[in-house]
Amino acid sequence: MKAKLAATLLAVDGMVLCLAGGLSYFFLLNYPSLRTTPVVHIAVMACGVASGVTAAVIAGRRWATCLAIAEGLLTGLFVLLLYVGFALPRSEPLADGRLGPDFTLPDQAGRSVSLADYRGRGPMLLVFYRGFW
Amino acid sequence: MAELRGLGEISAALGQAGGTVLAISADPPAKARQVALSNKLDFPVLSDASLEAIRAYGVLHAAGRAGRDIALPANFLIDRNGQIVWQHVARRVQDRAEPAEILRWVQSITRQD
Image (cartoon, rainbow over all chains, first blue to last red; front, side, top):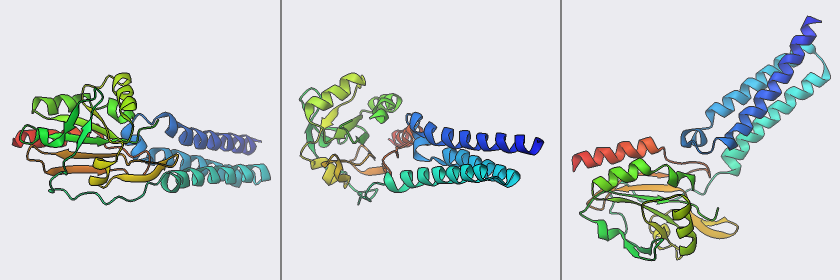
């Protein structure tokens, strides 16, 4: 009886950890370090899988095994989505130490801005963003 | 886009040193204006619809969104002599440079100046 209760709790706990670990990634996209290195999320999901597998071993029942497999699949899917589905093409960026190529582009007020305007004045940070959100 | 909002401190540090942040995307000027207004940005938001700068820096993502050519998320820090001193180019859609790391680089080159 006690073993069954423990198995049920572990199985539920495993699923909760898996879902929380995976879904929270998409709610925490405003934190650059979390979105760039999702190890915390993957670790939480792995704990969920471990919990589910333990439950399956204790219970020795079909439902617990199915749940453990589902948790494993969810975790695999999450990793695949992040590292394959969301992979970007490799760029051939310019080497450090090279001169940054000049450009002249309109800003939000319609004024022309050139990189060369700032040469000798101060450091510049170029931030390329995807846009079209 | 969220990455543009987190640049306040970096923008201030660059401004003090005589430089600035330049945000660049393939969006048309009207969209760049909207981005600048809605995020209350105090630095130029440039429209690179012809992909001039995006190609020159090697950060083109061909057919990256709904079949349109856009920029990869990327940062280039350029010193006052025009040389690239640090860069970050995203490998996944969600990759972004850490604002704290950018600020450290900005501070290290402004100190040298």
